[in-house]
Every structure is written in C-alpha cells, then in structure tokens.
Image (cartoon, rainbow, N blue to C red; front, top):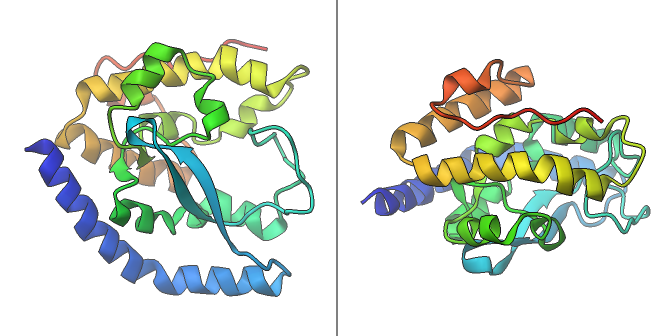
Amino acid sequence: MYSLIKRASDIIFSILGILLTAPLVIVSIILLLLSGETAPVYRSYRVGRNGELFRMYKLRTMKRSKPTSSPLTAYNDNRISFFGRFLRFSKIDELPQFFNILNGDLSFVGHRPMLPEVFLYYPKEVRNKLGKIRPGVTGIGSIVFRDETSLFKGVKGSYEVFYRDQIAPVKGELELWYIKNKGFRVDFKILRFTVVAVLYGQVKSIEKRFENLPSTEIESI
C-alpha cells in the first residue's frame, strides 16, 4: 500500500511541480543560452532501481570546455560557471528532475541516484540493497551531505579515495537506515528538512530529528 500511494503521490506532485516551476526553469534556460551555453539541459546516466541506468535531467552548471576524468565535483571546482553556482546553491538546477519522477526513474524521497563510477565506491551489500528501491530527488543522505564538496577542502590526496574511504561508508549507512525505516512519516520529515537545508544551508542536530540515525561524522583529514 505504501509503494502504491507513494507512486501515485509522485505522479500527482511531479505534474504540479512541472507546471509551477516551468516559468523559473524557462527563465534559467534562457539565461544559460544568453551566457553562451548551447545545451542548457544536462543529461547524465545514473544508477536506478534494479541497477538499471537512466538519464537524469539537470540544468547545466559546468562549463563543457573544461573536462575532467574525475566523477566527483571538487571544492570550488573551476568548471562550475558563475550562474551555475547560484543554480546549484538554490537547487534550481534540480527542477527538471520532476520529469524523471513522472517517468518513474525517481521518487521524491529515496537515496540520491549516483553516477555508475561513484556507485562502485560502495560495498556490494550496500549496492544490492540500494538497487531494490527507486532513488529519490532528496533523501537522508542528501540532507546530511547538503554541501558535500566542502568536505574535499584540504584533501591533499585523491578525492576518489577520500570519498570511498570516508564519505561512502557514512552515506551508505544513512541510506540503509532509510530503507529500513522508510514510510510516510519518515518521507514527510525528510521533505520538510530538505526545505530547511535548502533555505538555511544545513539542518542542525540532525541525529536528534530522526530516531536511531547512524553516525554522520566524517573522520578528520
């Protein structure tokens, strides 16, 4: 019953979201075009339910003229355009994902869909469990790691190694916690605190907001 109602809610509210945010998305696309960007909508393959790849939609925030071999976004990454920083901070770049929700690729709440390369940083057991549910636009991991790139500040070695050894274990436990505790009450709280995180940059004392939440501490560099 939970899955059916959640999917029905996803369809209804994604349609409303598309209609309500269309003017903002259109204006953002026009501004990106005026800035010289010829492909303002970015499509990136992400790992979805049952391990299947799907194309996730975002507004483009990075300059295509500066490619990199890393799947991770660095702290103060110089590939991010001036307008792109605003789109990322405000989360306006995520608005096209209402179409992914309508298509059934995403839900409003779940674990954040990852690039295939990043997905492999997680242990096989975690990947198997994450693959059983539909990813989400937001989730407990998205709230805790609201500004994930800031964790790379001061990292002298490989970002990929730091992510695999420090971030992935913590984030993986958080996403497994969601799978174990998912329900309407938890989903609503995650949506509510996502709004708080977007407006204020973070949610203080997150461990006190959700029962039995795993540790969110990242080891010092």
